[in-house]
Image (cartoon, rainbow, N blue to C red; front, top):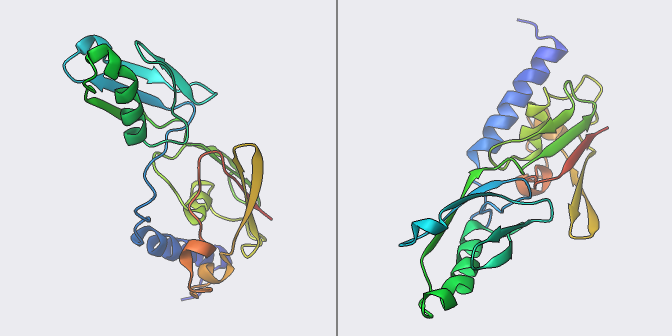
Amino acid sequence: MKLTAAAFLALSLQSALASAQSAPPPASEAYRINPGDQIDVYVWGDERLQRSLNILPDGSFAFPLAGTVRAAGRTPTDVEQELSRLLAPQYKDVPPQVTVSVRVPSGMQISVIGKVRSPGNFSPTRYVNVLQALSLAGGPSEFADLSNIVIIRRQGGRTEVLRARLGDIMKGRPGSGDIARDVPVLAAGDMVVVP
């Protein structure tokens, strides 16, 4: 049976994607809230303070009796602790129990451009690595240089450039053996450029 180049590439992508998905993400990869996310806040014992809120573009939200709270880049647990601390004076210095959950993670957006079949912006509902992002974009085009993929990441006021090397992985070889380095996990706002 003879495989076309496109069929071989599709099989290689499926195989590499399956192996990348089987590796569990590091424990430190707890979801971090992003601008545009919708969160639910519940203060136990006070139903008046149950709210569904959108995170503003500046990464904050306003909450009764607490004021403006910065949420972007923080975990829901971090925001729970901050709200509990801010609300404590209203409850006779007894910190209330606060629950924060992400209802809609719409702020988790990535872009994939360059030599892919369907470039664009994507909103995955979970963290994805660069290989999974290529899959979202329909896979690489025939002449894509998979050994020199660039990831542009903005953090704070600075821009960071990361490299992804998928050439060997897509050919069924293990690459450098460091999957975390060769196939990095993307963060909200990352732009993947496939030359």
